[in-house]
Image 1 (cartoon, rainbow, N blue to C red):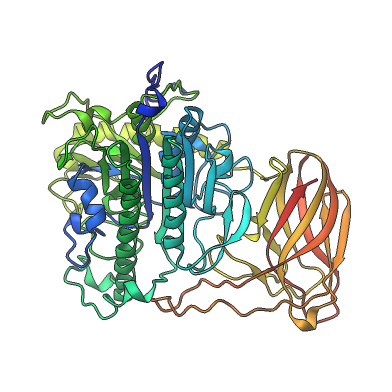
Image 2 (image 1 turned 180 degrees about the vertical axis):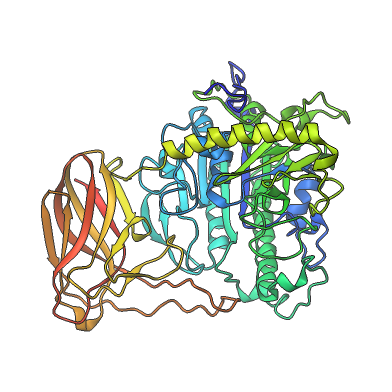
Length: 585
């Protein structure tokens, strides 16, 4: 495409350091935590001493930018490329999938002999070859969708298999990451540990231990437009952020106990702005916005071996810069198969002088057909207005008329970037869900289409189930591409009320074999109790599901529809469905 946005190609060191001299890497990513949700940022409503310590003992990137929503930021971190290039265009219905031909930072570290682990929310694809185990991670524990519907004792994914978590999910995820760090250190193997926490994203479920402090809190610091602030949401978010801080402390303690603190590079950042209107330093916008408040994230980097403590870096940087930064810091051989948009921040991190030779640059953000640009001084917004961000973080004073040359230049860049990214969006707009590209394929109903009167349990598809199936004309289908033809065992995760036992379910592929299985066992548990949900009108609902083997089916290679239907309904309804599993025989 030959534009300035196909940025530099990073050619890192041809010969890497010996394994014993390579730094470990710990990347901590939080979900929907705003720039202002830290005491380091000046928020007096909460205390985050462990996260703050990363800035105090390392560097704070004061102008660090991510995307306005979750999956795009993760894609940019993993690849060093603007997210539309990677196949990621949104957060649900498969839009978060990272194209299989993209090289991830985990691929690079794994190929260099690192132990690689991901613990938490992945959100860049579920079915192989999109699953984290196919993207460079030896170990995965967590969930692959945009959000989860409950945070206590729930079904999660461990290396592609369904398991049950223990206790509060964030604590459980941290337990697994701590175990991984300890095992790698015991084996004297360098590690790359990625911990994408799932909070303070909703549901706003918080253990009592953390919520008690905030239950009746009248926040000292409020959103600048107090009428927009939901105090129940704020209180829950603050509690979740203090829980995150405690778990960050546990991760840092694990480094200390394993003797890995000095030679571990730790990065902390968030994936977008806050998920509600609460104190955020007066920045304009929140999650979903491509203004400062939706895009600016705290970012702290600690590396005792190489980085002086307590510095602040004011040059603009973003999630696209983290892959080249980490690869250069570890001195790993890397010849990117695709051009990177990011650039290594190592000179800014390790240079002790106040001023570093660092060329001016622009960082681009896109939401559908809207583009926003951040320069070192200005924010050029999607409406063509210009703001001096350092002096005007709330974007109140439009300086476009006073800076016509700058506006003209940025307008042209915005048009060029929009056109280029729209081509990328279009190229990735028609992708079926993959089956048989690995031994096991999970097909949650999140990725399905419900036909007829079948209803979804949550307004967001992510971790939902389908219910109210009460007609033989109704069915559930997946747009699927079968990569490996052959025989597959089909498992169904379902619930069935006593009155509906005896219904006959069918599974078929377009113009292919159909199998059928009668439901013979009642499984009708209640919805999970939501007593730890701290806001009213939560739209998240979940329950347990039983596994039932539906039989074996021959699947042909290629694209078609996989269909779950029914041919007999002795009661008033059929089953509720969470997912089907296909195991290649």
